[in-house]
Image (tube, rainbow, N blue to C red):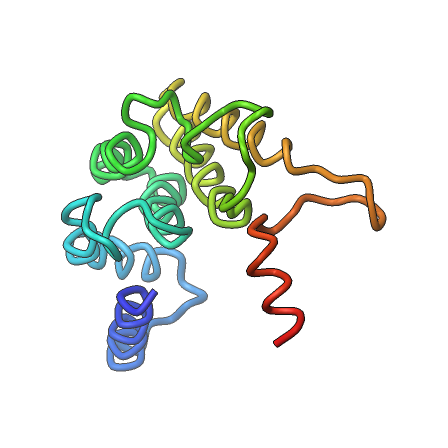
Length: 172
């Protein structure tokens, strides 16, 4: 999260200094294009905590590259983001960002809000590249999130399900 905040702070300073007209689509896309290369350095190895597949931030991060492609028509970064989608959480697992696709398995530790960002990034990637694997990753992930649907209290999907932590947070 800290890396993303640093990136946003640096970009906001650059935007202020350059007097970017945010109503000018061409200027915004040019600024985004200039940021794409430097932003790639923040995802060097998917196995380093804070620079890999943990939590939601890298899912949002990959989505940034796909959204840029969709907005600009420039797919030059799609390979980078697609490779990270495979390497980070889906490699060899068929898009299983939760590490187990079985309703009979324990749901403890599943952070549905976090993995949903990966699913959204997968959808953006499928739209930007036509990659059927990314579409399948999204489908698998949404199916897994759906396993946490509960009709109690008006219905909904659990944010996460580590009950001892929830109880601790409620009683603290």
